Amino acid sequence: MFKTSLRKSLLATVVLGAAVLGLSAPASAGNPMVGGAPMYASKNIIQNAVNSKDHKTLVAAVKAAGLVETLQGKGPFTVFAPTDAAFAALPAGTVETLLKPENKAKLRKILTCHVVAADAMSGAIKKMVADDNGAHPVPTVGGCEFTAKYQGDTIMIQDGQGTVAHVTIADVDQSNGVIHVIDRVLLPAS
Image (cartoon, rainbow, N blue to C red; front, side, top):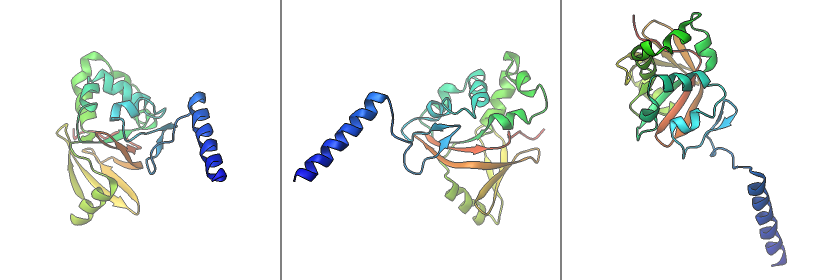
């Protein structure tokens, strides 16, 4: 009995100490860190994305396009989230041009082409691809249709211009859907 009381007391001390120091619990089991930040399944897409050091450009673009409120909504949404490096790989000046107020409609179109109106975890995507003999059409909120494929454990999304984005971090569970981090910006067909 003494050992049990001692263990409970030690556990309470550790929990209290962590709270006092401002330490928080890690992201839920199985939910990865993204951009050095824990992603919490209890938070929505925007609440998590703003904490990722790898998604500053995406967050700025979502704000410029007026999509914050939408992506904080009920969903469900599957967001293929390009990293800052993916945006940097676009031709020089592209991001700066898209962020201008006069290009809001074009930016909004590109960003909503990264969103699917469903909660599609990687296992479900792979099943759809397999059921469609290796290539599954992906209709997006923005009206684009991309193609999902996979090789081994890597899911790939081919955009309307033939560029292939690889999912580098899959199944980042959100309260209103899921994020899959990708290494390229998806663009509509010209």
